Structure formats: C-alpha cells, structure tokens
Image (tube, rainbow, N blue to C red; front, side, top):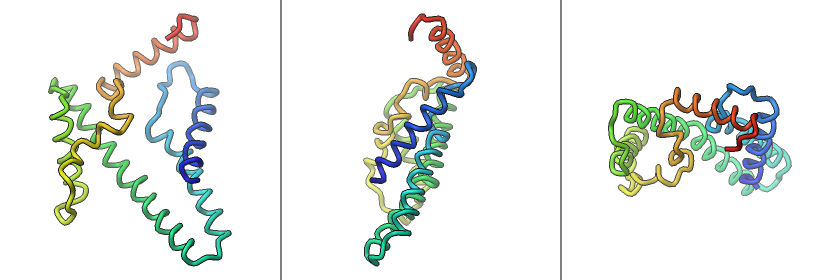
Length: 162
C-alpha cells in the first residue's frame, strides 16, 4: 500500500511538472520528485494511524514510519553526497569505473554508518542497483546536463523528436 501511495506521488509530480515547466527548466527527478511521493506516504500513514485500534498494527506502523524517515532523510543525504563525489570525480577527469564507483560508495557507507555497524562488503555494489545513479545524466556535469536538456526540449517543441 505504501509503495502504491509513493508511486502515485511520482505520477502526480510528473503530470504537474510537465504542465507547468518552462522550456529552460531541467526535468528534476531526484529530491524534488520525492516530495510528492513522500507526502503521499505520510498522508497514508496518518490515515492508518488514526483509524487503527490494534496495538500490534500501531506498533508496526510506527516502526515503518521511523524506518521510512531514516530512509528518506538519512539515506537520501548519503545518496546526494555520493552523487556530488562522483560528479566531482568526473569533472576532475577521474575514471568512472565500476571499481572506483564501488570503492567511493563503500567508503561513504562506512562514513555514514560508522564502525559500530557491521556491514557486508558487498554493499559497495549497491550504487549499481539505484536507477538514478546509473543514468547517463549522473556522469556529466550539471552545466552539460542543462544544455543537453534545453536542446532536447527545443527539438521536442520543434517536432524533431528525441
């Protein structure tokens, strides 16, 4: 149910943004897109908490709420820092190999979770399963992404396709 509420938030965000975006505005998909989806999850949570009388269900919902908060605030901050670091690597001419991206992710994970948390070394490869880390826009500078998006929008408006 929470996944459905979350994805409906993304759908609403996409529809509203496409209606109101200016030609020069890039299609922001990361944190701004999460606002509507997270809001939907919170609205659902508030509704469920208000309407449950079962103590076990309430405990489950509150645990889910806290875990969601950790994922939304803490983990998304970690992801933003990872994107910043990998964009800096690109801008400095460093190779963006799977090994470099994985070691950067692993070190950042250790920084965020500290030495008291035992984590599997395979966490180094988690970045590869997160869709917005593996899109081409992540590997180009923001300036290049904006220029490319602006040109794409012009071609779209002029009927030249993608």
